[in-house]
Amino acid sequence: MNKISPHKKHSQPPGALVPRPEAVQVPRPGTATPQPAAGPPKPASPEPTAVEVSNFPPRFSKPDLEKLFHTFQLSRPITLPCSTHFSRPLRTTVYLFSREEASRAVKALHGTLVGCQAISVRMADMKEEERKVAVVEALADELKIGVINTARVYYPHLTNSILEVREHTEKNNFLAFLQAREPVTIHSDPEVQAISNQNFAQWKLVAAGAASEEDFSREKDQNARLEALKGLQMELERQGVLKRIWSEWEGTWKLDMTAF
Image 1 (cartoon, rainbow, N blue to C red):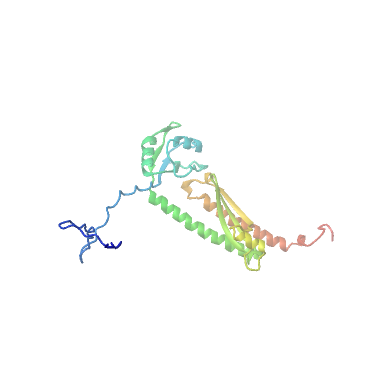
Image 2: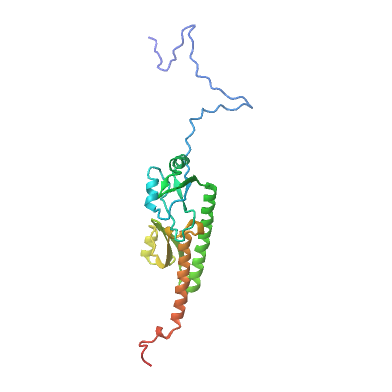
C-alpha cells in the first residue's frame, strides 16, 4: 500500500490558471507618490464681530440695549458706559457671535427710533478694537508690576512673600486683589505641602481695588479694568503712608493716652 504524505502538495491540472497576488505599484524614481483624495474642507469657525451703537438718548439704559439685541447671538455680555457729562454722540460697542450676525444686526437695527432719535448701528473696525485690547493688556501688566513694587516698598514684612495680582469680574464690576502667601519649601508644614500638591494655597489679602465699567465713557478713554488696578495701587500707597505715620506715633506704645 502506498502511503500518502499529509504535506504533499496538490498539483494544478494542465492548462489551469494559477492565481497571482495583486500587483503592487512601485513608484519610479522622480515620480510623485499618489496621495489619497482630501476630504471636504472643514467649515471655518465663526469670528466674533463688533458693531458700534451710537446716537442713543442719554436715558437709554442697559436693559433697553439688551432688549434691542435680544434676537441676536452675542459673543460677550452687553455693557453701556455711564454718560455723566452727556458727551455726544453717545456710543458703545456690542460684540456679536459672527460677522454674519453682526451684518444682520446692522441691517435690522440701523435707524431704529429710540426716544424720538434714530440710532446708528454700524460695523466697527475690528483691527482698531483688537489694538485697543492689546494696549489695555500691556497697560494692565505694567500696573500689576507697579502694584507689586509698591507693596515691596511700603510693606517690608512681605519681603520674602510671594505676591500676585489677580483679577475678577462680577457683572460689570472689575476687581483687583493683591494676594500674598509664603513659599512652600521642604521646611514647610506637612499640611501646607499636602494642600499645595492639590492646587490649594493659603493666600492672604493685602489690598483690593474695584471699578464699574458703567462709570466710564468711551470718549474719555477710560477703562474699568485699568481703573481697578490703579485704585489698588493708590490704596496700597495710602495705607502704606498711614502705616508709617502710625508706627512713629506715641499711640502705638502708650497704654493710656490721657496719662502723662
